[in-house]
Length: 211
Ligand SMILES: C[S@@+](CC[C@H](N)C(=O)[O-])C[C@H]1O[C@@H](n2cnc3c(N)ncnc32)[C@H](O)[C@@H]1O
Image 1 (cartoon, rainbow, N blue to C red):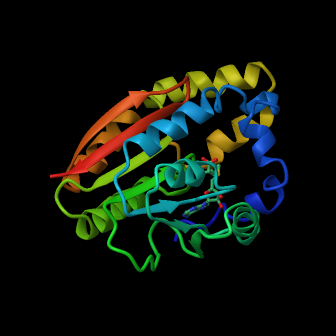
Image 2 (cartoon, rainbow, N blue to C red):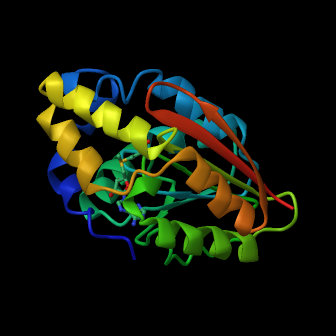
């Protein structure tokens, strides 16, 4: 579920690691401090952990470096193949934020740069699923683009338009980037205490702990 954007990554898989390292001018601001952002997610995680939207495995590597038990969930076949080549021992399954058979009892659900593929209604559903599966003290740690408000989003989209970043503008309009107050409410309503911290001009760290 929420898989409507999966095919975009059939192409992007070939250049994704260039994008995150700042070589794609349009996305440079989105990926500012990429490695620190992923490290912040990994540092806030307790294992065993289910990671959604693994992509090319960059967050996974940081989780494994902490010696956490990880099950990767990735709906795009080309991304699964790229990550399996890098991390041969990783348990990596086809699935998504809402439908996954991880086969472990996780203490955390984590993700970076992917939760915006879900509508806000699907995000609410996801938090409920995680609340049911986690013990008290269990974590949801996501890094993703969020906007302070709908008007802040409009201003940023207009700014990117003026500087000719048409692909980024299309992405921001097409996918389900939500706001800080909405994300706080979705997590709180599902039974989490949530802390949001700004990581760059786009990305926030969402650190939620089950009550
Ligand atoms: C922008 S990439 C992020 C990759 C990696 N996590 C990172 O931080 O670089 C988004 C990833 O989410 C995956 N994805 C798309 N829809 C998804 C869904 N509904 N559930 C889980 N992952 C999804 C894509 O296939 C892609 O690998």
